[in-house]
Image: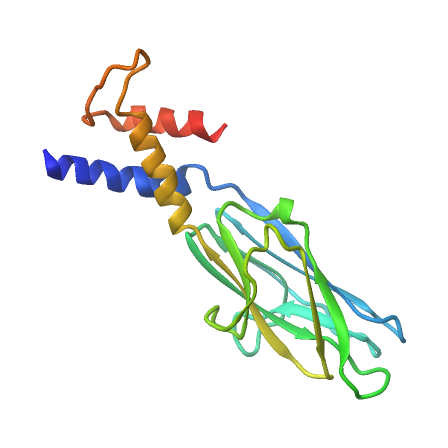
Length: 204
């Protein structure tokens, strides 16, 4: 009986991220001082059933900032859509200065609409592997980041972690399913169909 309960808990814990995954696209805009040439640049990240990428356009002759996604040292993408997963890492390359104006460091502002983020926890961190220092701990709550630098590439990563929310969601379902509609205890030997119905009701 204990083994059945354990298997049921595993199903409940990990099914939400699979059953209720929704496609989402987030545009991150970099905006610098308007000196000469291009001063705004955008990159799109997100999730869908199938991964998809779009190469970044060539840089104009003059620009004061530039951002793109770079899953490796050579790729430059204006759009980087991953297939659904509880763990994700989107690597961003940012030039906050560009090739115009004086060589001193200048600020650039990154902004995004948190309503367009998918379900889960999203953080912005330094570096290319999502393991660097955290600069934005919750991208749902904080929707801009100001960074100053010279005319070179700086790397940041958007990290997604969905495990904790799935566990809490699963445990809440488990608690709700321990009683029937009249408040009577019913045990945990329920069908997968009933689990799915409970999940859908809670997700509305």
